[in-house]
Amino acid sequence: METSHAAAEMVWAPEAFAAKFDREPFGFEHNLSGLGLFGFDNLTALARQYAGFDQDYFVAGSAPTPGTEFYAVPRLYQQPHEALEHLDDAAYRVLLKRPEKFAPDFADLLRHLFAQVVAAAGQLAKEEIVRLESAIFISSAAATTPFHFDPEVNFFSQIEGEKTYHVYPPAAVTETELERFYKRGIVNIGQLDLSKRQISQECVFNLEAGRGLHQPQNSPHWVETGRSRSISYSFVFETASSRARGRARSCNHYLRKLGFHPAPPGIHPAIDALKSGTMQFVIPARQGVARSVRGMLGR
Image (cartoon, rainbow, N blue to C red; front, side):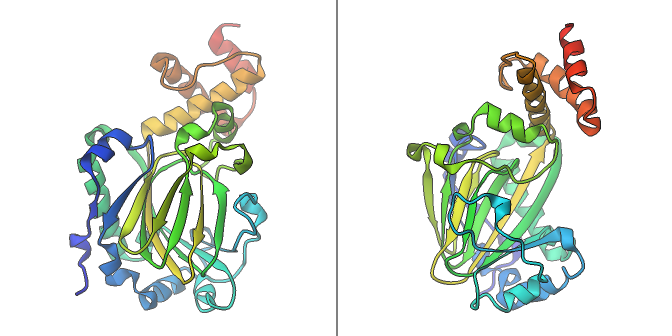
C-alpha cells in the first residue's frame, strides 16, 4: 500500500542523534520508498517540468575514480528527462534540485520531514533557517560521484537500488581547507584531495531502499551506485549561525595571509561575531579585504 507523505517517517536511535547530530555521520531507517512520489514514471514526469530551468538540474557522467576533481567530470547538456530515458545505455547521474518548486507534494514532504529533525534537535527551534531545500538523485548502475563536501547539513535517504556511501566526519577537513572554500562566500561544492584523508576516519554506509544517513555540514564524501538504477532523496539546510561560522572562516583565511594564526570558530564567540560581521560587508565587494582586517585588529 502506498505511503502518504503525511505518514513519511525517519527513524533513528535518539542517543545517536543526540551525540552525533551535525558532528558525525549516523544511519537511520525510513519509509519513503513507499511514496508514489518516487515512482519512476512520476519522476520522469517531474523531470520534464525542469526543461528550461538550467539552474535547477545537473546531468553528468560517472567519475572515473573517486578522487577525480568534481568539476573535471564533464557536465552533459541534456534535459533531465532525456537522460532518464537512457540510464541503461550509459553512466548518467541526474540531479533534480529543489523539486518542491515544481510539485506541491514535494514541498509538503520537505516540511514534514524537517519538522521531525527540529523535534529531535531542540536547538533548531531557536535557530533562523536561511536555506531549506531538497534534491532527488537518479543514477545509472555503477556510477561514481567524486569526493567533495557540501556547506550544509544533510539527511539522505535511499529510495531504490543500492548505493555505497563513503563519508568522513567534518573533523577530517582542516581549517585551512575550509577557509579556502568559505572565502568565496557562495553555496557550492567544496573540492578536496581524497589522498590526504585518513582511511581510519572513513565511515561506509551500504544503503538500500529504506535506509539513510545523516551527513553533517562539511563532511567529505564520495558515492557509488550498485548493479542497478539508483534513486535517492535528500534534504539539506543552513542556519544563520552556520552561515556566520562560514564568514568567520573566510576572515581567518585573510588573517592567515597576513601572517596571523587565527583560532577556529567556536573558541572565541565574540571575536567570531566580529569576524563574521566584517566579512558580511567585505565578501560581496572583495575589495580592500586586507585593509578591512587590519582595521578590525587595530593594526
